[in-house]
Amino acid sequence: MRPFDYARAATSEDAARQAAEGATFIAGGTNLLDLMKLEVMAPSALVDINRLDLNQIEEADDGGLRIGALVTNSDLANDTRVRKHWPVLSRALLAGASGQLRNKATTGGNLLQRTRCLYFYDRATACNKRDPGSGCAARDGFNRILAVLGTSEHCIATHPSDMAVAMRALGAEVETLKQDGSTRRIPLGDLYLLPGDRPDRETVLEQGELIAAVTLPAPVEGRQIYRKVRDRASYAFALVSVAGIVAVSEGRITRANLAFGGLAPKPWRNAEVEDLLTGEASSDALFGKAADLLLAEAQGFGANDFKIPLARRTLVSVLRELSQEASA
Amino acid sequence: METQLTINGTQHKLDLDPRTTLLDALRHHLGLTGSKKGCDHGQCGACTVMVNGRRINSCLTLACMHDGDEVTTIEGIGQPDNLSPLQQAFVSEDGFQCGYCTPGQICSATAMLEEIANGWPSHVTGELDASAELTTEEISERMSGNLCRCSAYPNIVEAIRKAAGGGA
Ligand SMILES: Cc1cc2nc3c(=O)[nH]c(=O)nc-3n(C[C@H](O)[C@H](O)[C@H](O)COP(=O)(O)OP(=O)(O)OC[C@H]3O[C@@H](n4cnc5c(N)ncnc54)[C@H](O)[C@@H]3O)c2cc1C
Ligand code: SF4
Ligand code: FES
Ligand code: FES
Image (cartoon, each protein chain N blue to C red):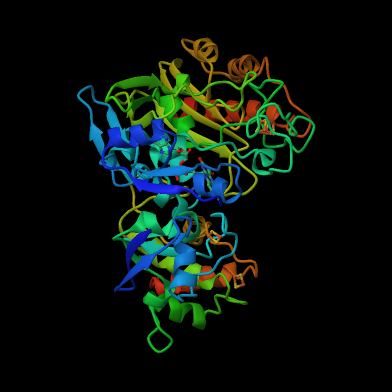
């Protein structure tokens, strides 16, 4: 690890100020320290935000939930309100990492964790995300875990979070704070940037902008599941995952919120797919059409070609389960 | 960086390079070598300790982030002449071969049983609002952050089940 200055933030504004001056926020540290040990990230200063008062889960006036950025993945998964009203979020969190890691990992840090692309981690190889302009070793390399949607010729990395996929399906928003005390709310779908020709830029956040909280809208009708397909039954990142919230009334789908992990540089959601399903009677033919639409522009890079049929089968399976359960 | 840690009930004042992980502070600065370094990247669980009662990977956190915290390591869980029920069960059920992963397994399992007692669900728990039974499936899922290169898994699961009073 390269040397760095370490300071504890006194207030959120102080944290944002230190970060605006060049420091990097550290929360749980489970992603940042991993990357600092490999010198993939080498901040000259860390600002520790762990003592800030951002670790509460509060009910909002609109029936939604406001989740402080420092709420750990364990506490969020275990929260009785989340388990009852937003179960897809508990399930996604419980499907991620390990018991030890979830105790440290925070809500804000989870959203901003970096890709698990092998070349991003390996400083001896070309990677436009780590070293802009150097190329992308993954395109013609070991890209089994990488993206098939939303890629560019410069980067085909995925965003690895499970939690973010569930939050995207739930319509979450991110609340941020800058050093002057100003705040803004960003729909989770707008937080992440697609790689384009600048894969090193991953979010719309400005230097020094602190994630203070994530808000969930009031609970919605319908069954919720999180299906994660991976190489091991536990403690592995998703190859493909689907967060689904589906409501059925009198045999017709009245709501289909669907978000996907493992497929794209950000938790993926496609409104056209949801529109296609809504108002229709559930059938395998319909689910197949939804998968066609979702994957119309999907592009594999060799080793990850399998993700396209895998995503299709996972989506169809999730829709079958949700529409059956919901009508039962 | 001055850091005060309470480790296994004893206060320690340390002056550390901020780069020092909690694991390195324990092993190199305090001589508590029970916690092991397997991967140093959060992947194996050999470094598992409890901080303020919760299990974490001590390799993926900086000691200076824990100023004022209470740390429990394997040395605090029991001693050779005063084994904790889990330590005793790992011995009687042969829950290890080389033993390298064992301190992490035992720290992790100690906290894991507490998590179940507190009603925490897991990925394999059927209903999110029901309490979990201590099945093999539950133990395996909840202990998946602790790898064992000797693959002593069946006996580790048995030891945990036995210590938790679940019978054979
Ligand atoms: C072995 C292993 C397996 C894993 N498996 C999974 C898995 O299956 N699924 C999954 O989803 N994840 C998995 N993870 C990743 C884990 O979920 C993340 O490491 C964790 O969520 C990051 O949270 P943190 O608080 O530790 O972040 P940190 O490491 O502290 O920070 C991560 C980034 O976020 C920034 N940041 C943190 N908080 C804020 C804030 N409030 N505002 C602005 N910026 C902030 C930091 O500056 C840093 O750039 C795994 C990790 C490991 C090591
Ligand atoms: S896919 Fe992206 S992260 Fe991976 S090597 Fe290419 S540029 Fe780097
Ligand atoms: S040494 Fe910490 S998890 Fe492997
Ligand atoms: S007993 Fe050898 S690694 Fe587990």
